[in-house]
Length: 177
Image (cartoon, rainbow, N blue to C red):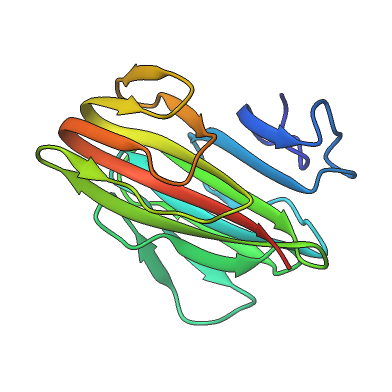
């Protein structure tokens, strides 16, 4: 879908409630390819976390503050959706994962996890997802098993999924306030 500000496109990974609009979602996970410098769309009342998953990254200026470089090795970057954000590409296009929650009802956290063998993922979140940044990773939950490649996502339906393989995951945890 087109960005709210019309300057790019995003692929929606997951949204609650299902089929919610940009004005009515409770939480949303999306993947965007950024090919040019420009402003971010405004989302009043929304908390956002941005993580670079491909490309060199970009420099962000939030509410006129000091520039922050966000790269593939950076920690996920948290900011308020109503903030004025300007982005400048560091060297070519960037793909980022964007997690958004409606502040009055939910909060979220995004964590990087390096997988080198079998690993138990612990979460007690209301909703959770695993996004594969790189590698090939098997995910086993009580309901099913999945194999993830780069930029694949699986929603977690139990608190203790097992992962195996080699690569990097993002654990996205969404909880009610």
